[in-house]
Image (tube, rainbow, N blue to C red):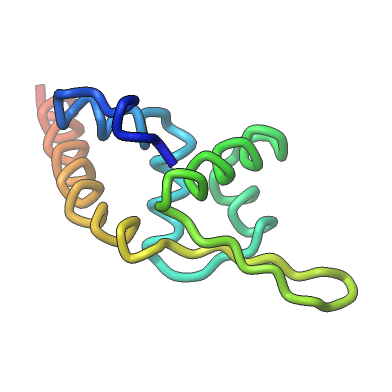
Length: 109
């Protein structure tokens, strides 16, 4: 988790520091729909296994994603949003609305 000395003074900069790459946003988008396993995220997000692992770890370290490991053979790992991560829903909804708006502007020009 970021310590308070690492927090940018600007709230927008802070948000971008936490979720400011396309992979993290796509992971959060998928997890807003509920619990997902690693392979589900890998297929949906469309990045490499290494990139997905790195981004999930960062999201987990920053308190946005839960990682649950089940003691089974083979091991089962599930990912979900924390309560704090779920509060990103209106942020991503606004981004989706703006994306649709922009798509309409471009296609109707």
